[in-house]
Amino acid sequence: MSSTGTPNEPVITSYAHAPARTITAGGVTYAYRELGPKGGIPVVFFVHLAATLDNWDPRIIDPIAKGRHAIAFDNRGVGASTGQVPDSIEAMADDAYTFITALGFDKIDVFSFSLGGMIAQALVVKHPELVRKLVLTGTGPKGGKDIDKVAGTTYWDILRATLTRSDPKEFLFFNRNTTGKPAARAFLNRLKERTSDRDAKIKTQGFQTQLKAIKKWGRSTPDDLSTITQPTLIANGDNDRMVPSVLSEDLHRRIKDSELTIYPDSGHGGIFQYHQQFAPLAVEFLAR
Figure (cartoon, rainbow, N blue to C red):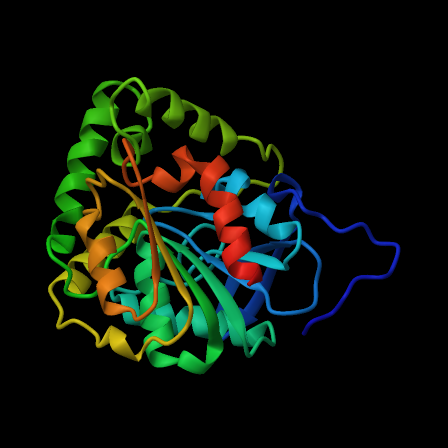
């Protein structure tokens, strides 16, 4: 379904104004947003833990959507998508496959962050023919060191955030220092740029199920990532407390010819803190 709009239909390249759509496949109605010029290989965005369609930084999506068909979606049971959140990363990848093929695509580029990067890895291991290029940010491999501790870190930071009446992402994604704090505020403000037609928040049970799936992924036997031959771009901050930065280096070692960028003085949300440097890098990589 690489339908191009009517010739006089303006191309939307702002995520804040991307139309909300749904498609039903395998008994699940998936909520998604699309923007950018249609036709060609789309870039599909795989979002992080507890996140909905409202959690993508427009400073990352918009530059990519200037030249590419960009699609963000809610996994099963998340946001406006129906059904129950699966309790394994592999099942989430199966749902992603169902969604992508229901849209009629047989080749995509993947842009993923955090939990989304785990789902993306599971997808490319199972359906290598589907993925042309892979962007893995703030993530780690199956069986990666300390991935099973993500839940503990997350709950601790949610508690810290609650006590200070702040957003947990300020603690989880950014360093609590003079560079991190303003970067966190700027990021959270950007997430509010879309004012109408916003997504439903994730339910607590769904969030807890996602954490269980991450724990299971961390304790599982690693996948053989040497089978990944797709051009791969890996990025993170140098002080990721959620998915330790060493795991980005681990991915880089295990995925042949992958490219690695680690941003200084930044955490799990390094790509958001450094969006002015990272977005052009991602655009160039996906256009190559």
